[in-house]
Length: 183
Image (cartoon, rainbow, N blue to C red; front, side, top):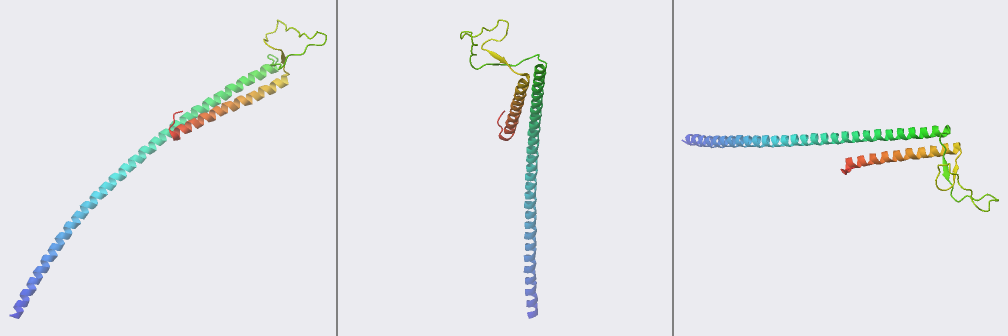
């Protein structure tokens, strides 16, 4: 009879172990299913965030490219304007030099102080002739070589001013791009 009791105790122990094992397996499979569902939700959320971030980066990149293209277009227009201004100034200076070289045009300067009267005139200045087109004080005509040098100096100055305006326009455009301050 003891072996029957031992067999019954063993059967009860086997049933308890089987119940424990099936409960453990059921709980584990339920937890695995929940973990998989949570993991899938997290993966979907992460993928959505990545997609949104990618779209945001692509939009930002497109905006930056549009800004860069607009800046390049403005700079191109500024360069063309600068080149045209330089070309026009150079043509004007060349025409002026040609007119000075052919004696078609003479440069004159206004004398700073009153001219002194010639000796024997009793201190009275000569009257200016009525045939001249010069109004105002006495004038002196410049030597053609000096006139050419003055024209060259003013030409360099004009080119410098045109270059300065071009640089200022360039800086304004860059400032507009980076600071969003309208030009």
